[in-house]
Image (cartoon, rainbow, N blue to C red; front, top):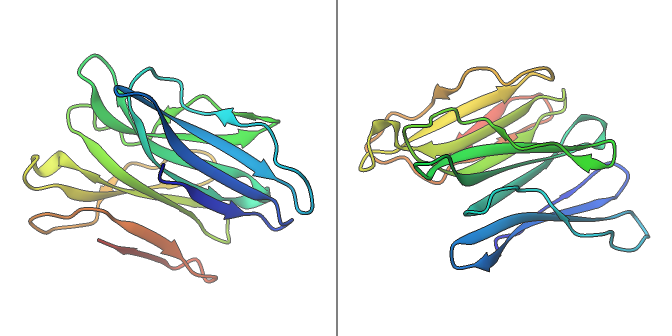
Length: 173
C-alpha cells in the first residue's frame, strides 16, 4: 500500500511501500532495480511489531536513498517519525526524527536538495489532537537539526515539501 518511488542519477529505481502483515502490524519495505537490470531482493526496513505507515522516499547526495515513515513506538504506542538510509548494502537502524514522544506524529514527507541536505515535514499533535501543526526538520549531512513548527493555523495536516535547483524549500499543507 501507499508506495513512493525515487530514481537516482544512475537510473536506479527505488520503490518503498507499507504492507499489512496483520490487522495490527504493517511494515515498510524497499526494492530497487538498476538501470537495465533486474529487480533486487525485497528488504524490510522497519523493525517494530506494530504499525509502520506512510513511507516517503528521497534520493540524496551520492545516490543514497533515504526513507521516513510513521511508526507506533514505545509502550504508549504514540506515532513517531522514523528515518533510515541505505549505506554499505544495508538499511540503517531506524532513528526517531520527530522527537515528540508525548504527541502523535503523522504523514511525513521527505525531500533532498541539490546540496545534499534532507528535509522532512510532518503533522504533529503538539497543538492538541484537534489542532495539529506542521513540523519541519533538516539533516545537514551530519545531524538532524531541532524541529521547528512551520504552520500556525487551526488544523494543519498532510504536508508536502519540495526543493528547487537553488536549494529553495517549499512546503504546503
